[in-house]
Image (cartoon, rainbow, N blue to C red; front, top):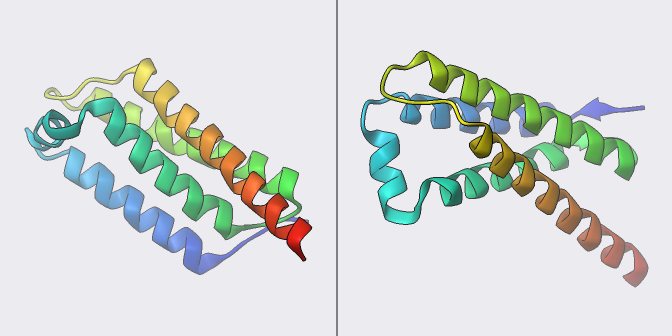
Length: 121
């Protein structure tokens, strides 16, 4: 059985909404990206969102991982879809691929950490 922790999901949704709002301000996305790079921003944001999501899903590890990956994939699609509606932004399949790569890497790392923690106990 799977359940969601409301507090964790609320934090995730607030972060996502703030990210979307900030990215919707003309010029803000390019200003942020000019410092560290667009793809780096995607990886950092979606890795953080994956941690929040993974910690908010209560289920066995496999279901927790799959649910987190699906939720993050949906958020990435929403993000890119909204960008396609703004004349000064553009949607990018490559950006979504970086979002997903960040999510997969973070889920693998979180599972590895939990496995190591379980073996210690």
